[in-house]
Length: 105
Length: 112
Image (tube, rainbow over all chains, first blue to last red):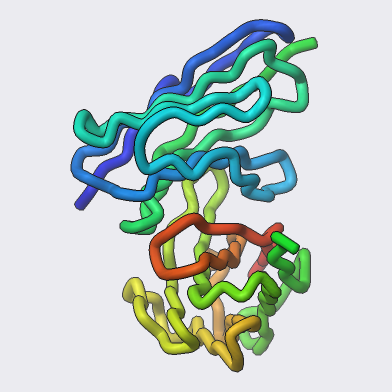
């Protein structure tokens, strides 16, 4: 089956630092989506980005579907950014392995 | 309104109980989903409903029984569960099948 790998698996940052999270998929997943799962389990939509680049405040994402990867950029991180970040191929209903982010004050 | 609601938030049930999880959306979406998430793992798809008809069943045991009474509601009926079924159960909806999904807050289920 399709594999969706995320890196790094764990990340610790000081508040104010920038980071890049990566999502690699073994085959075409179509309709890539990024989520932030907060400590209470809620999955919050960040981006729906089948291809191209989008920005929303301190966050931006780029998907290069032909090369089977997507990147999520977090700038000027805040403690509220802590949680788990998932990419997902919504057409194939498959989630990536996740990146667990902790931002320290 | 871009909200998906789920009730209850928490549920503790014995292995002989029958209970139901409820999910509701008022975004006019025609696809709804149930996912199961174990601790420190990604969500895994259980069922997909499209236009109120079961479209995908990911070989889920029959002790989980989904129901879509109308286009806004999705239920998951639980019967004779096992302790290993303890997990976070997430409902989602989307405009059509396989496009941008919106998730509810989940029901945290504990089977004793």
